[in-house]
Image (cartoon, rainbow, N blue to C red):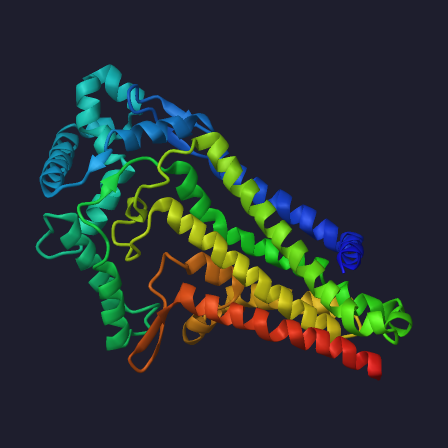
Length: 405
Protein backbone atom coordinates (compact mmCIF):
# COMPACT_ATOMS: atom_id res chain seq x y z
CA UNK A 1 0.00 0.00 0.00
CA UNK A 2 2.85 2.37 0.82
CA UNK A 3 4.39 2.01 -2.62
CA UNK A 4 1.00 2.52 -4.23
CA UNK A 5 0.41 5.72 -2.24
CA UNK A 6 3.85 7.05 -3.25
CA UNK A 7 3.08 6.21 -6.88
CA UNK A 8 -0.23 8.12 -6.68
CA UNK A 9 1.53 11.08 -5.05
CA UNK A 10 3.98 11.21 -7.96
CA UNK A 11 1.02 11.27 -10.35
CA UNK A 12 -0.51 14.20 -8.45
CA UNK A 13 2.81 16.04 -8.56
CA UNK A 14 2.95 15.27 -12.27
CA UNK A 15 -0.25 17.24 -12.89
CA UNK A 16 1.42 20.20 -14.57
CA UNK A 17 -1.54 22.58 -14.49
CA UNK A 18 -2.19 21.68 -10.86
CA UNK A 19 1.41 22.31 -9.83
CA UNK A 20 1.43 25.64 -11.66
CA UNK A 21 -1.76 26.64 -9.82
CA UNK A 22 -0.20 25.62 -6.49
CA UNK A 23 3.02 27.50 -7.19
CA UNK A 24 1.22 30.66 -8.31
CA UNK A 25 -1.06 30.56 -5.27
CA UNK A 26 1.92 30.20 -2.94
CA UNK A 27 3.56 33.20 -4.61
CA UNK A 28 0.30 35.16 -4.36
CA UNK A 29 -0.21 34.40 -0.65
CA UNK A 30 3.43 35.18 0.10
CA UNK A 31 3.26 38.36 -1.95
CA UNK A 32 0.18 39.63 -0.11
CA UNK A 33 1.85 38.99 3.24
CA UNK A 34 4.99 40.83 2.17
CA UNK A 35 3.04 43.66 0.56
CA UNK A 36 1.02 44.18 3.73
CA UNK A 37 4.24 44.62 5.70
CA UNK A 38 6.08 46.60 3.02
CA UNK A 39 3.24 49.10 2.54
CA UNK A 40 2.90 49.96 6.25
CA UNK A 41 3.22 53.64 7.16
CA UNK A 42 3.36 55.25 10.60
CA UNK A 43 5.35 57.74 12.68
CA UNK A 44 8.19 56.86 15.01
CA UNK A 45 6.92 57.02 18.58
CA UNK A 46 9.88 58.98 19.95
CA UNK A 47 10.95 61.24 17.07
CA UNK A 48 7.75 61.63 15.05
CA UNK A 49 9.68 60.68 11.91
CA UNK A 50 7.64 59.07 9.12
CA UNK A 51 8.41 55.34 8.94
CA UNK A 52 7.59 53.19 5.94
CA UNK A 53 7.76 49.53 4.97
CA UNK A 54 9.48 46.99 7.20
CA UNK A 55 11.00 49.76 9.32
CA UNK A 56 7.47 50.78 10.33
CA UNK A 57 6.97 47.47 12.14
CA UNK A 58 9.38 48.50 14.91
CA UNK A 59 7.46 51.77 15.22
CA UNK A 60 4.20 49.82 15.61
CA UNK A 61 5.95 47.77 18.28
CA UNK A 62 6.96 50.95 20.13
CA UNK A 63 3.44 52.41 19.93
CA UNK A 64 1.92 49.23 21.37
CA UNK A 65 4.59 48.99 24.06
CA UNK A 66 3.67 52.50 25.18
CA UNK A 67 0.22 51.16 26.15
CA UNK A 68 1.30 47.71 27.32
CA UNK A 69 -0.17 46.43 30.57
CA UNK A 70 -3.52 45.83 32.20
CA UNK A 71 -6.30 48.13 31.03
CA UNK A 72 -7.96 48.80 34.39
CA UNK A 73 -10.81 51.25 34.93
CA UNK A 74 -8.33 53.71 36.45
CA UNK A 75 -6.12 53.38 33.38
CA UNK A 76 -9.12 54.00 31.13
CA UNK A 77 -10.01 57.19 33.01
CA UNK A 78 -6.47 58.47 32.58
CA UNK A 79 -6.35 57.59 28.86
CA UNK A 80 -9.75 59.18 28.15
CA UNK A 81 -8.71 62.35 30.00
CA UNK A 82 -5.44 62.46 28.07
CA UNK A 83 -7.27 62.10 24.75
CA UNK A 84 -9.75 64.86 25.59
CA UNK A 85 -6.88 67.13 26.60
CA UNK A 86 -5.07 66.33 23.33
CA UNK A 87 -8.10 67.38 21.32
CA UNK A 88 -8.40 70.63 23.26
CA UNK A 89 -4.75 71.48 22.65
CA UNK A 90 -5.03 70.53 18.99
CA UNK A 91 -8.11 72.77 18.58
CA UNK A 92 -6.19 75.64 20.14
CA UNK A 93 -3.31 75.13 17.71
CA UNK A 94 -5.03 74.59 14.37
CA UNK A 95 -1.86 75.35 12.45
CA UNK A 96 -0.43 71.96 13.51
CA UNK A 97 -3.06 70.16 11.41
CA UNK A 98 -0.84 70.48 8.35
CA UNK A 99 2.43 69.60 10.06
CA UNK A 100 4.20 66.24 10.16
CA UNK A 101 5.19 64.62 13.44
CA UNK A 102 8.78 65.85 13.06
CA UNK A 103 7.58 69.38 12.35
CA UNK A 104 5.32 69.35 15.41
CA UNK A 105 8.29 68.36 17.59
CA UNK A 106 10.50 71.01 15.99
CA UNK A 107 7.86 73.72 16.50
CA UNK A 108 6.23 72.81 19.81
CA UNK A 109 8.61 70.32 21.43
CA UNK A 110 8.51 66.59 22.12
CA UNK A 111 6.27 66.86 25.20
CA UNK A 112 3.60 68.72 23.22
CA UNK A 113 3.88 66.17 20.40
CA UNK A 114 3.30 63.23 22.77
CA UNK A 115 0.40 65.06 24.46
CA UNK A 116 -1.42 65.92 21.23
CA UNK A 117 -0.38 64.67 17.79
CA UNK A 118 0.78 61.26 19.01
CA UNK A 119 -2.47 60.55 20.88
CA UNK A 120 -4.84 61.65 18.14
CA UNK A 121 -3.00 59.55 15.53
CA UNK A 122 -2.68 56.47 17.75
CA UNK A 123 -4.72 53.38 16.74
CA UNK A 124 -5.01 52.40 20.39
CA UNK A 125 -7.15 55.44 21.12
CA UNK A 126 -9.31 54.76 18.05
CA UNK A 127 -10.10 51.28 19.35
CA UNK A 128 -10.65 52.66 22.83
CA UNK A 129 -13.13 55.26 21.60
CA UNK A 130 -14.96 52.74 19.43
CA UNK A 131 -15.66 50.66 22.53
CA UNK A 132 -16.32 53.34 25.16
CA UNK A 133 -18.52 55.59 22.99
CA UNK A 134 -20.93 52.74 22.20
CA UNK A 135 -22.51 53.27 25.64
CA UNK A 136 -24.76 56.25 26.44
CA UNK A 137 -23.48 57.97 28.48
CA UNK A 138 -19.90 57.06 27.56
CA UNK A 139 -18.64 53.98 29.35
CA UNK A 140 -15.96 54.32 32.01
CA UNK A 141 -14.64 50.75 31.67
CA UNK A 142 -13.74 48.55 28.72
CA UNK A 143 -16.00 45.78 30.00
CA UNK A 144 -18.99 48.13 29.92
CA UNK A 145 -18.00 49.64 26.57
CA UNK A 146 -17.37 46.27 24.92
CA UNK A 147 -20.73 45.00 26.17
CA UNK A 148 -22.48 48.10 24.81
CA UNK A 149 -20.75 47.75 21.42
CA UNK A 150 -21.73 44.09 21.28
CA UNK A 151 -25.37 44.84 22.09
CA UNK A 152 -25.42 47.62 19.49
CA UNK A 153 -24.12 45.22 16.83
CA UNK A 154 -26.75 42.67 17.86
CA UNK A 155 -29.47 45.32 17.57
CA UNK A 156 -28.30 46.19 14.04
CA UNK A 157 -28.35 42.54 12.99
CA UNK A 158 -26.06 40.73 10.58
CA UNK A 159 -26.21 42.91 7.46
CA UNK A 160 -29.76 43.88 8.51
CA UNK A 161 -30.73 40.26 9.12
CA UNK A 162 -32.04 40.27 12.74
CA UNK A 163 -30.75 37.88 15.37
CA UNK A 164 -33.18 35.59 17.16
CA UNK A 165 -33.43 35.85 20.94
CA UNK A 166 -31.57 32.55 21.23
CA UNK A 167 -28.74 33.95 19.13
CA UNK A 168 -28.58 37.15 21.22
CA UNK A 169 -28.37 35.10 24.39
CA UNK A 170 -25.69 32.91 22.83
CA UNK A 171 -23.41 35.82 21.92
CA UNK A 172 -23.91 37.64 25.20
CA UNK A 173 -23.07 34.46 27.08
CA UNK A 174 -19.95 33.88 24.96
CA UNK A 175 -18.82 37.48 25.51
CA UNK A 176 -19.28 37.09 29.27
CA UNK A 177 -16.45 34.55 29.24
CA UNK A 178 -13.90 37.19 28.20
CA UNK A 179 -11.64 38.10 31.12
CA UNK A 180 -11.61 41.73 32.25
CA UNK A 181 -9.60 43.84 32.74
CA UNK A 182 -7.75 42.79 29.62
CA UNK A 183 -4.07 42.99 28.79
CA UNK A 184 -2.67 45.10 25.97
CA UNK A 185 0.59 44.89 24.05
CA UNK A 186 2.21 44.10 20.72
CA UNK A 187 1.32 40.97 18.75
CA UNK A 188 2.04 42.14 15.21
CA UNK A 189 3.07 38.80 13.72
CA UNK A 190 0.08 36.90 15.07
CA UNK A 191 -2.42 39.68 14.38
CA UNK A 192 -1.23 40.08 10.77
CA UNK A 193 -1.25 36.31 10.24
CA UNK A 194 -4.76 36.09 11.70
CA UNK A 195 -5.99 38.90 9.45
CA UNK A 196 -4.51 37.31 6.32
CA UNK A 197 -5.28 33.65 7.12
CA UNK A 198 -8.47 33.88 5.05
CA UNK A 199 -6.37 34.26 1.89
CA UNK A 200 -5.28 30.67 2.43
CA UNK A 201 -8.69 29.91 0.95
CA UNK A 202 -6.95 30.45 -2.38
CA UNK A 203 -4.73 27.48 -1.53
CA UNK A 204 -7.89 25.36 -1.38
CA UNK A 205 -8.70 26.34 -4.96
CA UNK A 206 -5.18 25.41 -6.06
CA UNK A 207 -5.16 22.00 -4.37
CA UNK A 208 -8.57 21.19 -5.89
CA UNK A 209 -7.09 21.89 -9.33
CA UNK A 210 -4.10 19.70 -8.49
CA UNK A 211 -6.37 16.84 -7.38
CA UNK A 212 -8.85 17.09 -10.24
CA UNK A 213 -7.25 14.21 -12.14
CA UNK A 214 -6.93 11.70 -9.28
CA UNK A 215 -9.77 9.58 -10.68
CA UNK A 216 -10.84 11.43 -13.83
CA UNK A 217 -7.29 11.29 -15.16
CA UNK A 218 -7.57 7.50 -15.28
CA UNK A 219 -10.66 7.81 -17.46
CA UNK A 220 -9.11 10.39 -19.80
CA UNK A 221 -5.94 8.36 -20.36
CA UNK A 222 -7.98 5.14 -20.60
CA UNK A 223 -5.75 3.45 -18.02
CA UNK A 224 -8.90 2.74 -16.01
CA UNK A 225 -9.78 -0.02 -18.45
CA UNK A 226 -6.48 -1.70 -17.60
CA UNK A 227 -6.23 -1.26 -13.83
CA UNK A 228 -9.86 -1.46 -12.72
CA UNK A 229 -10.52 -5.10 -13.71
CA UNK A 230 -7.66 -6.27 -11.47
CA UNK A 231 -8.06 -7.14 -7.81
CA UNK A 232 -5.55 -4.43 -6.89
CA UNK A 233 -7.47 -1.85 -8.92
CA UNK A 234 -10.74 -2.79 -7.26
CA UNK A 235 -9.61 -2.86 -3.63
CA UNK A 236 -6.35 -1.05 -2.95
CA UNK A 237 -6.12 1.52 -5.74
CA UNK A 238 -9.14 3.70 -4.74
CA UNK A 239 -7.96 3.80 -1.13
CA UNK A 240 -4.40 4.66 -2.17
CA UNK A 241 -5.68 7.46 -4.35
CA UNK A 242 -7.74 8.95 -1.51
CA UNK A 243 -4.88 8.69 0.97
CA UNK A 244 -2.42 10.25 -1.49
CA UNK A 245 -4.84 13.13 -2.11
CA UNK A 246 -5.26 13.74 1.63
CA UNK A 247 -1.49 13.64 2.17
CA UNK A 248 -0.96 16.16 -0.61
CA UNK A 249 -3.74 18.43 0.69
CA UNK A 250 -2.28 18.28 4.20
CA UNK A 251 1.28 19.02 3.09
CA UNK A 252 0.30 21.86 0.76
CA UNK A 253 -2.08 23.54 3.22
CA UNK A 254 0.37 23.57 6.11
CA UNK A 255 3.26 24.62 3.90
CA UNK A 256 1.27 27.66 2.71
CA UNK A 257 0.24 28.40 6.30
CA UNK A 258 3.85 28.11 7.50
CA UNK A 259 5.04 30.51 4.80
CA UNK A 260 2.34 33.07 5.68
CA UNK A 261 3.06 32.93 9.41
CA UNK A 262 6.83 32.65 8.91
CA UNK A 263 7.01 35.87 6.89
CA UNK A 264 5.17 37.80 9.60
CA UNK A 265 7.21 36.32 12.45
CA UNK A 266 10.47 36.99 10.60
CA UNK A 267 9.60 40.69 10.17
CA UNK A 268 7.56 41.43 13.32
CA UNK A 269 9.01 39.00 15.84
CA UNK A 270 7.20 36.41 17.96
CA UNK A 271 5.96 38.74 20.72
CA UNK A 272 2.34 38.65 21.85
CA UNK A 273 1.25 35.03 21.29
CA UNK A 274 -0.44 34.93 24.69
CA UNK A 275 -2.11 38.34 24.55
CA UNK A 276 -5.93 38.32 24.31
CA UNK A 277 -7.70 38.53 20.96
CA UNK A 278 -9.34 41.72 22.26
CA UNK A 279 -6.18 43.73 21.47
CA UNK A 280 -7.41 43.71 17.87
CA UNK A 281 -11.04 44.54 18.76
CA UNK A 282 -12.14 45.17 22.33
CA UNK A 283 -15.69 43.98 21.56
CA UNK A 284 -14.67 40.62 20.06
CA UNK A 285 -16.77 38.00 21.94
CA UNK A 286 -14.24 35.15 21.72
CA UNK A 287 -12.21 34.49 24.87
CA UNK A 288 -9.07 33.38 23.00
CA UNK A 289 -5.47 34.51 23.00
CA UNK A 290 -4.09 36.02 19.80
CA UNK A 291 -2.06 32.89 19.11
CA UNK A 292 -4.93 30.62 20.05
CA UNK A 293 -7.26 32.39 17.64
CA UNK A 294 -4.71 32.07 14.82
CA UNK A 295 -4.19 28.36 15.53
CA UNK A 296 -7.95 27.75 15.55
CA UNK A 297 -8.33 29.65 12.27
CA UNK A 298 -5.60 27.55 10.64
CA UNK A 299 -7.05 24.27 11.95
CA UNK A 300 -10.50 25.28 10.72
CA UNK A 301 -9.04 26.14 7.31
CA UNK A 302 -7.30 22.77 7.23
CA UNK A 303 -10.58 20.96 7.91
CA UNK A 304 -12.26 23.00 5.17
CA UNK A 305 -9.46 22.04 2.77
CA UNK A 306 -10.00 18.36 3.58
CA UNK A 307 -13.74 18.71 3.01
CA UNK A 308 -13.13 20.37 -0.35
CA UNK A 309 -10.61 17.65 -1.17
CA UNK A 310 -13.33 15.06 -0.56
CA UNK A 311 -15.71 16.97 -2.84
CA UNK A 312 -13.06 17.12 -5.56
CA UNK A 313 -12.40 13.39 -5.28
CA UNK A 314 -16.11 12.60 -5.64
CA UNK A 315 -16.38 14.82 -8.70
CA UNK A 316 -13.24 13.27 -10.14
CA UNK A 317 -14.68 9.78 -9.65
CA UNK A 318 -18.03 10.69 -11.19
CA UNK A 319 -16.94 12.87 -14.13
CA UNK A 320 -14.84 11.78 -17.07
CA UNK A 321 -13.10 15.12 -17.66
CA UNK A 322 -10.76 16.98 -15.29
CA UNK A 323 -11.98 20.39 -16.45
CA UNK A 324 -15.37 20.44 -14.67
CA UNK A 325 -13.77 18.75 -11.67
CA UNK A 326 -11.43 21.73 -11.30
CA UNK A 327 -14.02 24.38 -12.15
CA UNK A 328 -16.82 23.33 -9.77
CA UNK A 329 -14.84 23.77 -6.49
CA UNK A 330 -13.46 27.03 -7.86
CA UNK A 331 -17.01 28.22 -8.54
CA UNK A 332 -18.07 27.30 -5.01
CA UNK A 333 -15.27 29.42 -3.55
CA UNK A 334 -15.66 32.51 -5.72
CA UNK A 335 -19.44 32.53 -6.06
CA UNK A 336 -19.57 32.48 -2.27
CA UNK A 337 -17.64 35.75 -2.26
CA UNK A 338 -20.05 37.42 -4.67
CA UNK A 339 -23.08 36.09 -2.78
CA UNK A 340 -21.92 38.09 0.25
CA UNK A 341 -23.40 41.17 -1.44
CA UNK A 342 -26.89 39.61 -1.51
CA UNK A 343 -28.36 40.07 1.98
CA UNK A 344 -30.70 37.03 2.02
CA UNK A 345 -27.79 34.80 1.01
CA UNK A 346 -25.22 36.02 3.53
CA UNK A 347 -25.53 33.13 5.97
CA UNK A 348 -25.29 30.66 3.10
CA UNK A 349 -22.39 32.52 1.46
CA UNK A 350 -20.24 32.45 4.60
CA UNK A 351 -20.35 28.66 4.55
CA UNK A 352 -18.12 28.69 1.45
CA UNK A 353 -14.36 28.39 2.08
CA UNK A 354 -12.96 31.88 1.47
CA UNK A 355 -15.86 33.83 2.97
CA UNK A 356 -16.15 31.44 5.90
CA UNK A 357 -12.48 31.77 6.81
CA UNK A 358 -12.66 35.54 6.46
CA UNK A 359 -15.61 35.88 8.89
CA UNK A 360 -14.74 33.20 11.44
CA UNK A 361 -13.72 34.40 14.91
CA UNK A 362 -14.32 38.01 13.81
CA UNK A 363 -18.03 38.48 13.11
CA UNK A 364 -21.06 37.31 15.06
CA UNK A 365 -22.43 34.85 12.51
CA UNK A 366 -24.65 32.18 14.00
CA UNK A 367 -27.27 29.62 13.05
CA UNK A 368 -30.26 28.89 15.26
CA UNK A 369 -32.56 25.88 15.22
CA UNK A 370 -35.00 26.69 17.98
CA UNK A 371 -33.01 27.06 21.20
CA UNK A 372 -29.91 25.40 19.68
CA UNK A 373 -27.34 27.88 18.34
CA UNK A 374 -23.94 27.33 16.76
CA UNK A 375 -21.46 29.95 15.59
CA UNK A 376 -19.89 30.09 12.14
CA UNK A 377 -16.65 28.21 12.99
CA UNK A 378 -18.67 25.36 14.51
CA UNK A 379 -21.01 25.25 11.52
CA UNK A 380 -18.05 25.16 9.12
CA UNK A 381 -16.36 22.40 11.12
CA UNK A 382 -19.55 20.31 11.10
CA UNK A 383 -20.21 20.89 7.39
CA UNK A 384 -16.72 20.18 6.04
CA UNK A 385 -16.08 17.41 8.56
CA UNK A 386 -19.27 15.73 7.34
CA UNK A 387 -18.15 16.22 3.73
CA UNK A 388 -14.82 14.55 4.50
CA UNK A 389 -16.45 11.57 6.21
CA UNK A 390 -19.28 11.12 3.72
CA UNK A 391 -17.79 12.01 0.34
CA UNK A 392 -14.50 10.09 0.42
CA UNK A 393 -16.22 6.67 0.64
CA UNK A 394 -18.64 7.78 -2.07
CA UNK A 395 -15.67 8.66 -4.27
CA UNK A 396 -14.08 5.22 -3.89
CA UNK A 397 -17.46 3.57 -4.43
CA UNK A 398 -18.07 5.56 -7.63
CA UNK A 399 -14.64 4.58 -8.94
CA UNK A 400 -15.31 0.91 -8.22
CA UNK A 401 -18.73 1.08 -9.89
CA UNK A 402 -17.13 2.57 -12.95
CA UNK A 403 -14.93 -0.51 -13.01
CA UNK A 404 -17.96 -2.80 -13.15
CA UNK A 405 -19.50 -0.75 -15.93
